[in-house]
Amino acid sequence: MIELSSKKRPAADIVGDLQSILPRLAVKDSSLWGVDAEGDAAVRLGWITSPEQALDLLPKIAEFVKWAGDHHLDRVVLCGMGGSSLAPEVICRVYGKEITIVDSTDPGQIHSAIFNRLPNTVVVISSKSGSTIETASAMAAFEYAFKAAELSPLDHMMIVTDPDSPLEKSASASGYRILTADPTVGGRYSALTTFGLLPSALAGVNIAELIHDADSVIQVMSSPESPAVTLAALLAEHEKTSAFFSVLAPDGIGNWVEQLVAESTGKANHGLLPIVVETCESAGFEGEGILSIALNEKVDAEIKIDGPLGAQFVLWEWATALLGRSIGINPFDQPNVAESKEKTSITLEHTDQLAMKSSTRFGSVEVFGDFDGVTLADTLNEFFDQVPEHGYLALMVFLDRFVDAQASNLRNEIGKIISQPVTFGWGPRFLHSTGQFHKGHPTIGAFLQITGDVKSDYPIPDRPYSFHTLQMAQAIGDGLALSARGVPLIRLHLTDRYQGLIEIAAAVSEVTRRRVTS
Image 1 (tube, rainbow, N blue to C red):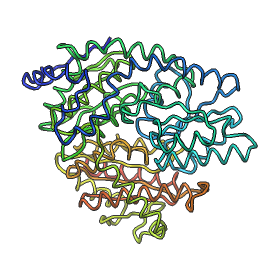
Image 2: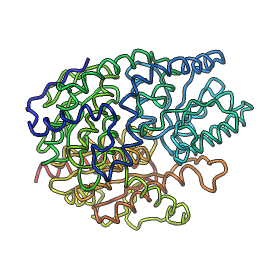
Image 3: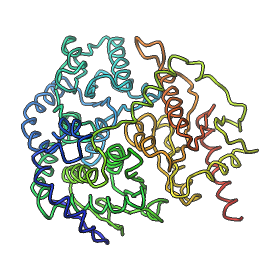
Image 4: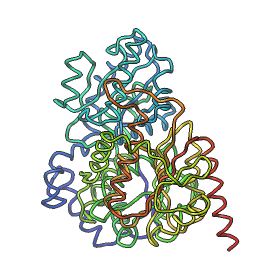
């Protein structure tokens, strides 16, 4: 079961509207979000019956798991982006199972994922179409690595994709093992489909338990006492005055909620941006304009939600769809995500931009943008002053999220300095998550990118560019899409990643000292 408690009572008019449409949502009525959204909704409501359909998947998934076990493939790697990778990552963490997620174009992260017990590795390539550049590049790199090690990719790789997709056709022609997914479920709603279940089962998760927990709450979601209605109504009322709510949750569940809500609702200058925090004492958990939400955590919060992971998945999917109805947006499209992809493609055709040096440099940190203080601390102080009064700062880091993990500490430290919320995202994975909100609700954001040189690059087979070139093109491409909106934007490029992060942290500490003593 799922238990939701709130310090506030949801608005009666919003609750009434949402309760009245629950029977229509339960039967996948695509007209609930208006005429403009009906086309998308007509082919994106399969998640409503995903728990029921998942039970039918169990025998087929068991065959794939048995095959991997019979061939001693006990290391699982998943190559996917957005919901295709975030859901399995969360599932495995909650159930205590190991899985390697490849949702990066950082060459060091790619190299580490490939060269680790390769003979005992099974790789799952997850993509609805196969056209996602990060996943396609990772697939090519793994295929090459297996062949170089005199191993057949067909004996170590399997595909999850939509029926009749370009990837399904090419993978079938090549002889890969393929398990198709429900094509009427979008990526961020796909936790309880083949995309979320197959990689998790290969890693050893008891997915039958996960599915049972999800299935057990379906009936209550469509009832008058639906916790999805309560949550959606509370969020919709909050969205009238603020775009932010905090999420404190174990095992990375907050990251999954972040991508579901931000990408579904952040458009047409509307939406909610989750602030994923580390602890209840972290900057951004509470504060002016922030609605605090705790999932399976024994802390004081304005909204508390307790329940097993499968039930959490169902609750948030229903609530997000209902929230879209209340605030008047289409929760199933992502109209601004393609902009960064297009800018990335253009940048890859003009790679001279990637080698540009800045005339403003402090130690190992080059500064790109219209902020030029005498020191790095001066520069950051000037930038922080440009964060909109009722807006937020997005920290977007295109580095190795394991080797350069200390970069994530900057979110909390910057949050202590400024009164506005601070979000953190590893590039390029945030492009498939909060990236939609950044460009769909742009006037309230300020954006700080961090990029860095690499000591060794890694080639992408059959491509004229490397992983680091792609990584930099994605950062610069997203920056171009943001700068076209006239928002505050700065990029800090590290000529030495380790030293550069130390210098940024020191500069942030210096800004903190100045503001405390001034």
